[in-house]
Amino acid sequence: MSGQGSSDPRERGGPLEVLGVFFLLGCRSFGGPVAHIGYFHETFVRRRGWVDEAGFGHLVALSQLLPGPASSQVGMGLGALRAGLPGALAAWIGFTAPSALLMILFGLGVGRLEPLASSGLLHGLELAALAVVAFAVREMGRRHCPDRPRIALALSATTAVLALPGVPGQLAAIALGAVTGAVFFRPDPQEARTATPVGGARLAAASRLLLFAALLLFLPLLARAAGSPLLTLIDAFYRAGSLIFGGGHVVLPLLRGEVVAPGLVAPDLFVAGYGAAQALPGPLLAFAAYLGMVAEPGGGIAGASAALFAVFLPSLLLVTGALPFLARLRRHARVGAALSGVNAAVVGLLLAALYTPVWTSAVTGPPDFAVAAVAFALLSVWRLPAWAVVGLCALAGLLLEP
Image (tube, rainbow, N blue to C red; front, side, top):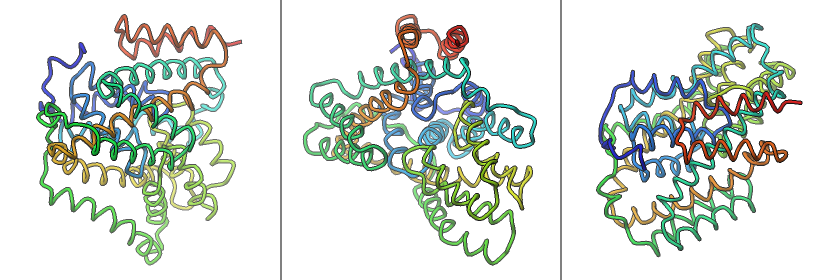
């Protein structure tokens, strides 16, 4: 592939570099978690070469196993590979800041974003996301499914996810990939040699995993004892961020139970903010900034900042805690074979997501299919950058609007 031959996956960078790249992605990454992974693949594997195909596949697999928003976790992992723990934090800030700032403005009453949810502009962005995800599936399939057994495994994973929607199907597909890989596949020695190192000692990584568990256990007790509205918000959003499996949309009932049921946010405000979040780029969980903004008591800028950090903190601790162990495990032959099977299963997961929700929500007729097909060709044949394809699809969506 043209974008990764010139860069060594072991090359390191700085947090400011990571912040800048992810901020630009946060401004244009429409389409939800699966589309975000497609944008990441195009940017960091094909164009910038920050990570090799195997490493990217392992990051996606890890994000499926851990609770939390999958695309944000992949972004944090990419930032950690590039610049350690500061890089992970920079990736999260850069990717989340654009949508979080817009959600805060919406909470202040300045924004009027809800009409975008039914506009041709947003529909064009959905078609762009379809092309980006299809391109990522093709590129990852070439690397992780080079033979018939792995293709069969990917298709089995697709079938499992479509037959068992949600978390059960995803976990079943990943388990199937790991067991099949460990038993039947030969380790890839080249993959073991190119395992991307992650800075930081295992003790520091383990301490972050322990901190995740300690906060989940003791924050409720601390919030109840202190009686602080701000600490109550932090506890609610940290707990919600710790229990998300299956993508950002799963957080809706969790957050509703945490903030609407106790009376922190009015039901109509909750629904209005969730509708506005659908029209924004970046992670859906930036919705937390809006909820913290309008919460009573404990709202305002302080509440928005606290809620936003608390809902993503579990992912930051889990990813940076698990990643050093994953990088070392890749070097063990049998574990590498199991991860090879997991990577093939991840391709199947993305293929299933390409159908639903991406295809089913974006393509409603022949004109939509034509726009998506042209966008895919522009990415795969003419090698246009994703941002240019996104702009063209947004224009096409406006032109197609009745």
